[in-house]
Every structure is written in C-alpha cells, then in structure tokens.
Image 1 (tube, rainbow, N blue to C red):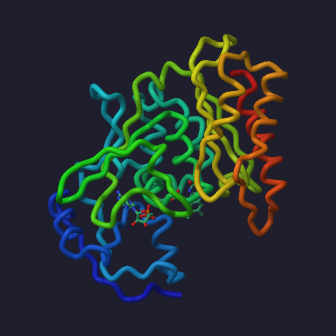
Image 2 (cartoon, rainbow, N blue to C red; image 1 turned 120 degrees about the vertical axis):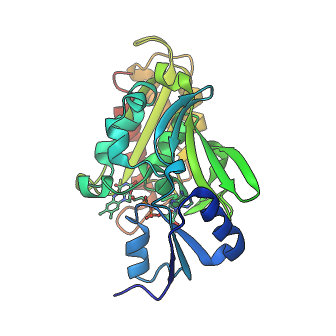
Length: 282
Ligand SMILES: Cc1cc2nc3c(=O)[nH]c(=O)nc-3n(C[C@H](O)[C@H](O)[C@H](O)COP(=O)(O)OP(=O)(O)OC[C@H]3O[C@@H](n4cnc5c(N)ncnc54)[C@H](O)[C@@H]3O)c2cc1C
C-alpha cells in the first residue's frame, strides 16, 4: 500500500519548524528517521496532512556535556550514540541496549527523539530513560519546558508532549555514569521488539548494597514503567539470591498486559526472568 497524499515541509532551522507547528497545529506530523513513521504511513495507520521533515535541524543533533549532565539532541541517531565517548562514559546503559534495538540499517536512520516521541511500549529507549532518571526537553514557539521521564510516558503511544511541541533533547544526569547498570531483554529473534525487557541502575560500589535502585520494564505493559515495589525490595541489599527472589516476588502487582502471543501471566513470568538476569553481577 502507498501512503495517503500529504504536504511535505522541510524547514532549514528550528525556528522555521516551530512556526509551522504553531500555525498548522495538529495536522502536522514531524518526521525524524522515518523508521516507524514511514511504515505507519504506508499502512495508512498514520495519515498526516503535513509531514514536517526535521532533517536539516542541526540544533537537534549531537551530544554535549553541560552543567545538567549529558544533553543528547533528539535527532541524534542510534548509530551515532553507539560511537559517542560521552554516551559511553555517562550513559553506559545506552551502549548495553543499542545492539538490541532493531538492526544496523534501522539504527543508521532511527533517532533517540523518534523513539521518545513514539513511546512504543516495547521500545528500549523509554525504559532506559526511566532507569537513568533522565529528563526530556520539549520546545514550541511559546518556549521550552523540561519533563522528567517519570512524568513523560503516559500510556500506549501517549506522552506528555503537546502537538505543537518537538522533542528537542534528552538530559541524562552526570551521576548516571557512576551508578551500576544492568540490562536484559528477551526477544523472539535478535533485533525484534522485546517480549520483555528491563533496565536497572543503582548506586554503590560493585558487590556492595544497592542504593536508590531504579528498575524500568519495557515490553510488558502499555508503556515503559518503573517497578517501585521491586525497587524497595532491592534498596540497601546486596544482589544475592535472596534479594533477587524478593525483588521478583515484588513484581506480582506489576500491571502487565498480554499480547497476541503472550498472556499476562506469561509476561509476568518473563518480567521476573529478565529482572533476575539483569541483576546478576550488579
Ligand atoms: C524492522 C524494524 C525493527 C525495529 N525494532 C525496534 C526495536 O527492537 N526497538 C525499538 O525501540 N525500536 C525498533 N524499531 C523502531 C525504531 O527504533 C525507530 O527508529 C524509532 O521507533 C523511531 O525513530 P525514528 O527516528 O525513525 O522516528 P520516526 O519514525 O520518524 O517518528 C516516530 C514518531 O515520533 C514522532 N517524532 C519523531 N521525532 C520527533 C521529535 N523530535 N519531536 C516530536 N515528535 C517526533 C513522529 O512524528 C512519529 O510519530 C524498529 C523499526 C523497524 C523498521
């Protein structure tokens, strides 16, 4: 099938893009790497009246370090993140997850901002941002605001972003680089979306008690979500067999959703498996 007719706009800079969004509003759909949006348009799941191509917005591209920590421009591609030394230093969790995100061809085009804006419940990036206490910078013609990842992912493909806003950047606190990190996902084939996955960070030295743990699941519910009861079970404990079992038991009230292949009870079981594996060695 081919996409429905649409108008194509390719502004030269951020100000031009924000002007189009403020004037043409909900009819405008931003295009980043196109790895999700183009298939959605070709299946006519998405039928934007105006496609706003962000390709020339250099303001939204690149990685830098500022007083708040790491700033990753929304248009930075997965493949660029994989090569970036600042990302490796401050957000090692991203490097652990990247090989599991699709395939090299998709990672060459797909962007971090596209994944954040789409909020696919099985995507890795939203869960990583929850686990790292990241914040999301949004811009519109009216100005800028910053939303904690905890308050950004609201439901199935639903976020706190308004239609006139662009995701401009992701901010990751500097101390994320000093925290221990664990990641594990189960997928039917390597590169497929996860059946269940988890990202974990915690303070404390290797083998010490885990302090302020953050556990974020993906692929198990309608959105990436933290498991607060399991975090409480881990806090102040070493990641030994007893603690791992207590954390897995504390997942019992996680609001899991089944899908066509996996009933909810199985999702819950898989959530326990990935959590246990992510915590081994932390
Ligand atoms: C075969 C295949 C396998 C895949 N497997 C995985 C996987 O395992 N894990 C995974 O996480 N993803 C997977 N993906 C999706 C991929 O990661 C996409 O790249 C990503 O979801 C969207 O990024 P994009 O830059 O391509 O965004 P696009 O497809 O261009 O846009 C996605 C959505 O975000 C909006 N958007 C994009 N950028 C912005 C912005 N800056 N501000 C506001 N709105 C914006 C668009 O309007 C659109 O609604 C897969 C894709 C394919 C084709």
